[in-house]
Length: 237
Ligand code: SAM
Image (cartoon, rainbow, N blue to C red; front, side):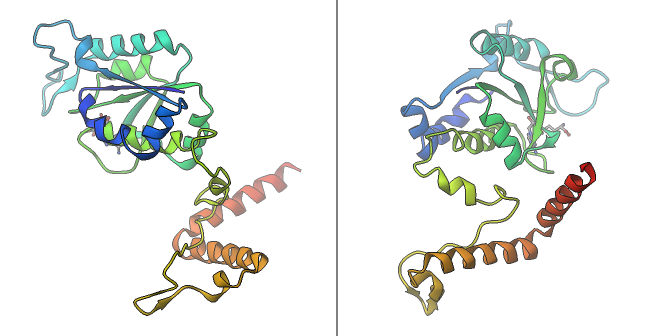
């Protein structure tokens, strides 16, 4: 997969893309990162990529020309890649979104800054808009990294143990069960006995039960979604 990231601050990505799973995935050839500095696509000597808003008001707006030229450049090597704008006004980015994006061949991620990007770009040159939550960040870079990390770890082969993905939070519409590691006693707190029993069936049952209880307590909405899904199935038959 090739991930093109359009940003005014390519340096923002240096640490994260050089770290842990993202760096390993790139070194092993599962993913390539193509950083595009939107300022490289400006046509003025000051490399200015923003301007004052029509109609007046606070803040600056990213000019359409540099963003569209950067998008066209990315599409030259990835003609089918969805062009995704990170914006607080987009659909909520969830595990399911990450799963569907992991099936794409390539991705193009566009990071806004200031008040955002000229609306005409959104209307004609963007395929999908994603938000990482109901809060406003100063730029789309952190959001692009969230999407990148969530997607890359799903690419086949990237994680050593693919089985761990099946049990993870949201994979089965549940939160995952709690984890413990050595030491067996930590400052007076014990590991649950069942995990020391060596009885795999009991461990599995305990984990299923814990996942269920934890989801009911913390995220009952996930269980409701599940029931809604079941009802939908019945209606259809
Ligand atoms: N004026 C915009 C509004 O009120 O909707 C907010 C612009 S924000 C200060 C600047 C940029 O940060 C946005 O263009 C977007 O790329 C990014 N951004 C901010 N919050 C985000 C979020 N929750 N999810 C994804 N991107 C976000």
